[in-house]
Image (tube, rainbow, N blue to C red; front, side):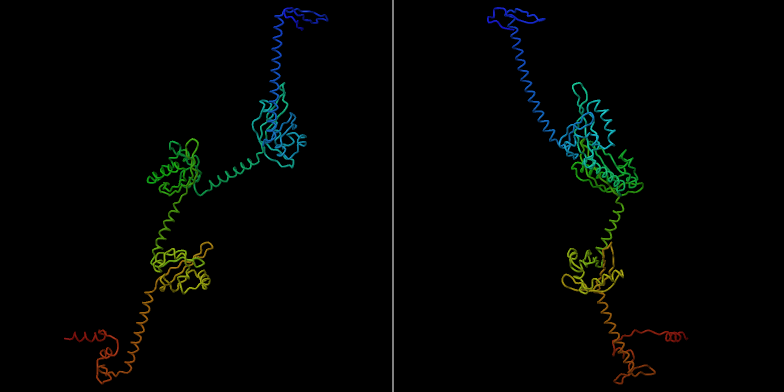
Length: 506
């Protein structure tokens, strides 16, 4: 088209049709309209060109970001064609498998996958990837260049061309070796925990209190039946089968302790009586609470039948009470001579506190027992089991008093111990000394009496004795004056018979 210099004149439009030139005449109004349309079209083209340039720049920026993400992502990325040949991958994928970029490009994903997984993965591609364009997350294994096999997790996505034909599959692959190891460790731990729970001497349980204060046993092991006579099935189905057997006097504290533990999320510890058949046993419960998302509280713990232990403790306390208050001193001594127990009497007699005695050795109390004889004494104790001997003890103020020691050997494991019962024999010693003195005096008196009888003249008829002055005295008077002897008078059987016979004569 060619514009006329004078807009009021028609313009000629030349065109060729069938090889012939044809001229069309347009009015200026029509020409202006054509010109406006052309200007508008040029503007649209310019705008489209600008938008295309912006889109290209955005695409380049996006591609740059994608490449940066693609190269720096910690998880492995790989793309394969529909034959399985690896087209592209990031550095993480290469590092994971130990291949170089050129080496990996000559392989298919089947080459790096152990044969045991081929059929499974083919089924996933056929049934999931080709049908809906992606797979569920699945697990399999890869084989590294050095031959080691390790587990991976991936999801495969399909790309199609403009005609809808599948051309590329890509996936993000994660090495799950650590996770598998942790899962295996957890599985073993759970199995070990289950074995421990089932073989535990106590009852292992999970106890729950919901946000309305209702109780339940989510889990309780089979040991419950052996300990309480209630089966775990009964208790998990209806906890009142268990709580209904708690002693009525202990039940209020049982509830209060649970509430306090739940409120403070503090460890739970309780001891209560539980009815088993026609008798009560003592149970001790320990557990740790945890708040659940729904507001309930869950305790993990165990309880034990402590009836025997409690009885043994009571017996031990009674024995301890008796030992502490025994009238004799009681000392336990270890293999080095250290005093490891002293009763109240030992403290009273020797004037030391119990703490002071427990910081001493037996050699500090017994001056007759030097440390050099200790090993010999230990061997004698081991051979004989029991020894009784006399010795001395020294009090805190330095006074020494005699004691009779009855020492008993006791071996606990490999530990040498002796329990010594010490008796203060001060009064016995005094009595012995007095008796010995009396015996000496009596022996002396008897000796003097024998001397007199050998020298004194006695009448053959009346039995009077003549003293050194020539006087005749009754025998008892003479002996009383010349010795410490005393007489008591009686009558012998012969004289009595004669006397009574005389009395009976008319």
